[in-house]
Amino acid sequence: MRTILLNLAIILFPVLVFGQYAYDDGLIITKESDTINCLVPLEVTYGDKIIIKIDGGSKEKVIKSSDLKYLATKYNIFENVRYTKKKKEKEALMQIVIEGFVNLYLKTTVNTGTSYSGNGGTYTMNTAPTLEYVVKKNDTTYYIKKNKFQETIIPIINDATELVEKIENKKFKYGDLEEIINEYNKIKAN
Image 1 (cartoon, rainbow, N blue to C red):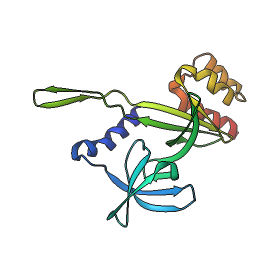
Image 2: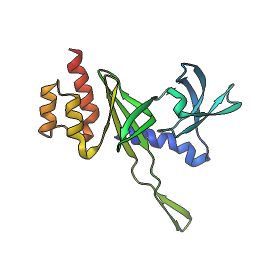
Image 3: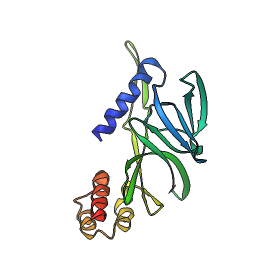
């Protein structure tokens, strides 16, 4: 969690100070398997459209995130993931957190808070970012809701009985999802 917040602060600082996105070398792979070397905005999450810079940054191009398979920066790799949330099909570029027998994906939503006027200017109180996780096993994706954590994750990892017991005994909780997936992948690798 601390790492995510640190990354968020590092990425948002130039945007807040200079009012523009910070760009860096990136790589995009489209759903048609075209590869684009370009400058991409450094963000913790991407919306429906992404403004990339090609030709050494002299030319901007808007690309739909739904047309992408992968977006990579030197800091993160994002994959276009389809999943079901509240009985609706969704698709989003999500950060690949863990790859293995089970993959873990993360979508971070930056929540802007309320603005207040005061001495010296306007102050905005931001709330904590919203973190959404998706797990993928055998090409099937599962949206992991915090309040349905056990009933969602246990069927996915039910072939690792010791790990399931730790979850049932509340030694592992929703906040331990990365550790759970790492441990599951280690068990399956042996």
